[in-house]
Length: 271
Image (cartoon, rainbow, N blue to C red):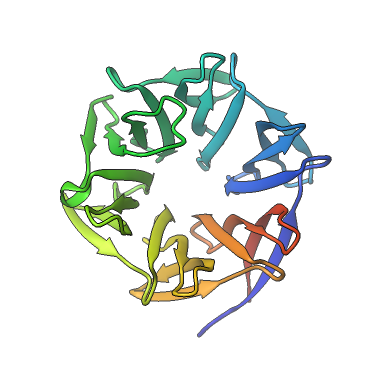
């Protein structure tokens, strides 16, 4: 049975752009990024509707990517030397995370057991341009870097509690695909008929969300559940991206409207 969906638009007060990237956690808190006066900051949004901006120390550009049920946040920030670093925010304390020897690092998720995913930027220290390389961090802190199928560039997006990883890779022909890494085996995920697929998030049940670009060049959000793809867009969207999904099926992301303004969205199953 297909459940109806309710969409909620989220805009950080005074911001020119708002993107939701994770949540809600067990307390109902969402995370995202907002742009004010040309500067990008992280933010939290509580269940009571209270917005709070935040930045790791020394950051001039902050992107939070994931929040765990207990409220731990991971992401990336750019310092004053234009170098990208990963960060962990746990109980008000920031920890910077860098893959040794990499020009730049971003963290994309962490599961309840402390396993993390991320990517290194192999050439561009600001991480604005590829190539990238995926990595996993074990609960013991061991870093394993990889590119699926020998691809020249890839990006690990999320890891769920069972250790399944999703992400994206670009093949030697320049085509971008989603990937799933489960039990040391890679599987390619492509939205049917799409020219580009990006797996952005996965929940404990194995449902995957992300974005795809159709044959007309328009980008939409998608949900992959039990082997079936569903494309969707919030009302008024000309571009959308699903960033994360919870066990209850709540999806967060962002969309761009016809005026070119980016808004966060929450897609909630209505039962």
